[in-house]
Each structure stands twice: as C-alpha cells, then as structure tokens.
Length: 346
Image 1 (cartoon, one colour):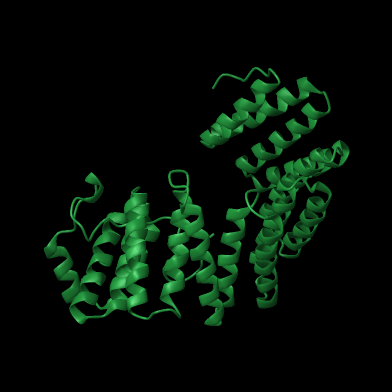
Image 2: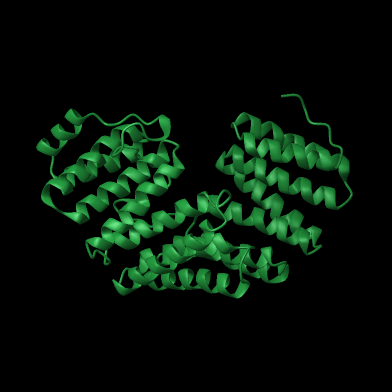
C-alpha cells in the first residue's frame, strides 16, 4: 500500500527510463523534439497530471515523456523542486516498465535533488517512501537494501508527522511494519502497526485502520501467538462488518480458518472456512471461493480426512486455473503433493 498523494496513487506501477538515452539496453530515450514541445506547450501542473494519468493507465513510456519534460522545465527555470518531481516520476515510470535498478537510481537522484531544494515538508517524504519501497523490492540482491529502506521509512514518517500529515505518516508506518513482519523485533513491528491503526482510528479512516488491524494479526501469527492472533482477527472481522465490506470480511474469515487450525480447533476452523465459502460464492468471486476451498482442504487434511481434502483442493485448483491464478495454482499443487493428492488434468 502506498502513501496516497497525487504521485503515489499510482505508486505500485511506475518507471521512466528517460533522462539518459539507451538506459538498461531496452528503454528508448525520449526524443528531444517531443520533450521540447511538451515544455513549450504545457505548464508544470499539466505535465504532472499528464504523467500521472499515463502511469495510472499503465503507459510508462508515455509518462516518461511527461516527466522528462517536467525535469527539463525545472532545469530551464532553475527550479530544483520541479527537477526532483521529474526524477521521481522517471523512477516510477522505470519501475512500471520493468527496470528496477534504473528506478532506484532515479529515485535516489530525486531524494538528492529534493534535499538540495530544501524541500522537506511535502515532496521529500513522498520520494523517500517510494525509495524505501523500491529498496525492499531489490533486497534479495543487496543485503544492505533492507537497512537503507528502513532508514528511509523512518525519515519519511518523521517528516510527514512534522508536517502534520497524519494519514501519510500512518501509511508509512504500515509499510514499514509490513516489511518487518516475521523478520525483525516483534515488539517494534507491533508498535509500528498499532501506531498506524490508532492514527487512522483518530482520523476516522475505518477501512485503513481495519487493514492495519489485519497486519497486527499477521504479526502475532508469525510469532506463533495464535491465541492472540485469533483475537486480533476477531477485531478485524468486526471492523469489516461495521463497514459492510463483505469481501474483506471473507478474507479475514479465511485467515481465521488458518489460525484456528494452528490452535488445534478444527471445529472452529471448519465453521470459519464454511462461512467464508458461503460469502465468496454469494459475491461471485471465484478467487475468494478458491481460497476458501483451499483453507477447508487444510482443515480436512489436518483432521485426517485425506479424501475430502483432495476433493476440496481439486475444486480450488479448478477455480485457480479458471481465473488465471498461476502462482496460486503452483502453490496448491505443492500442497497436494505433500499428501499425495492426484490433481485433475488442466
């Protein structure tokens, strides 16, 4: 989940390889004539809106032109804030086009430019949040990436709070906490997620608070505190019920099914799983239905009902295939192999 702002509404999908020609061997440089025309004909706000719209639509290459033009406009005006915005957009566009290392390079340059502009009340914490997110995506290849990401998260949250932007700060705390689940200090992780939830509760942002509540439950489950996790999921379910949000309630019931299995309470797990299945079918959501069937398969398997488990798993497998959920299909095939279930032919 990204910080909601005019830039970050599209923050999971962007990247622009534009300031340097031929970067990553596959990103074509923006033509000078296109950028010059954009600079001459559009204002900074128009370029910004155009770039964001292109990113949101998934057209990273078109967004590249807008943000490159925004950077050039900042250069022509001697405006480092505009240049930082252009670099941020180029980084997001590069990400959407599948060039994570170039995205990181642009985002680091954007941070440096925003710092030169002494821009720490609005733009800088947003860029830092994007940078932290990108660092985490590449942490498998760089052992120091996680440390850098956490430092950026902490700095961004502090700047947002200093600027009185509680909603954005809460989103950073949530992102930071999610990244720590199961891998770092339990109490610190829980404190970040609880802070995010409480801030959203104070702001009256019930849906965001419920999502933070879900991560609190996940944190306790990851620490094998299954009794406590069940209590937290119960709180989450009540929050979704108050919002009349049946899809999220269904997901929470699926989580409760798994937790109850870990607690050895197979009857409670069965009830939660069956209710989630009823809701998923009423919603007509095939993916949610498959997830519920998979959880019920787990309940059956743990209850030594192998034949029933295989039947449920195969029903889930059929639905995963129907909706094109390849990763879920592969994961389920691995689970089925563990108990010698024969999968149906595709």
